[in-house]
Length: 386
Image 1 (tube, rainbow, N blue to C red):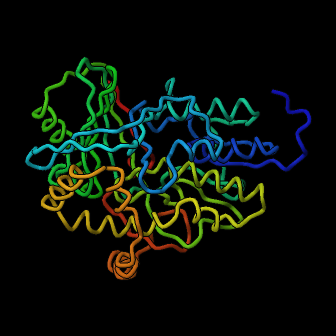
Image 2 (cartoon, helix red, strand yellow; image 1 turned 90 degrees about the horizontal axis):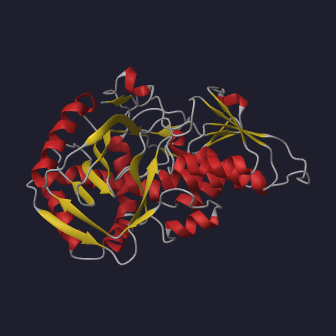
Image 3 (cartoon, rainbow, N blue to C red; image 1 turned 180 degrees about the horizontal axis):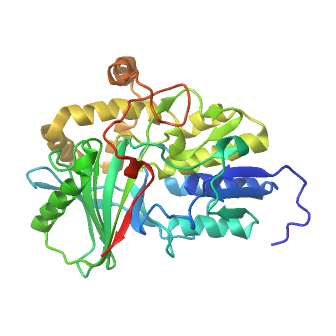
């Protein structure tokens, strides 16, 4: 591709080569900007182990496929629609859930072939984006900060493996073995991902993982080969602004995340695009990200409150209702900021907030301090092969 006639524009510097940083870089480069990305790791996707993850398709009216097309992201990576799954409650009572349109899309994350990370990298390099690996840029030296989660508001341990088991999409909701979250098993065409996510009790994640794995083996025994395990975490915070010192914060470093289920890839891609668009069009980034994300950030706190409050009995009810209607439409109701949720939100902010100094990287925001995580986890995921 020839860039010799590209209009002379200033070089944009981005810290972080995750989905948010790469989405911003792709849009900027196509608009004629020279773009440099500074990535602290030796490769893209280094936080992950080529595991299956999902792009949710219920938080916004726009289908995720249409969103990708609108923000200029090609699907040159593994991408599979999800219409059906099995949900289990704490008693292992199952409920088939399904939807007419996809309620989510499977992708893979990591440094391997076919992952979202490698796909975005290929798109960025094709249009001239420069990436400096093993280089940690200071925030004050860049235009866009996309360095990923700074402190965990949710933690997951995952295992990838090979298996001859039938294709499986299953989620177990049990507060005793996945406090505040859930565990899950995805097997697609011989490749599997098993994980356990929690929003508290981080120091017990290994025990929760083992107990959840045992429960899934009770549901339907499956063999695993070529196992690889790793840890990752998600970062959520509310804020009025995602700007600081002239820099734009995108993705999870800014706390853009679905606080209900911890599915933040759509948030990362759309806020990366919004940051690039604000530079290209000279528009207010805060206005653009609020348009992209909508009320999802605030409604996420209300959803989290009810998810925690209901316990296992509430989760059983959630599963039953999900099975009685189109799952995508049911989840869309959860993501609406209804009037009663808007009235409840200020009370929840006051009740949930702690005034101690926090470690999120966005200044002047609401947050809940987390104290259970070790310094080892703060540095990023640990990957073990067995």
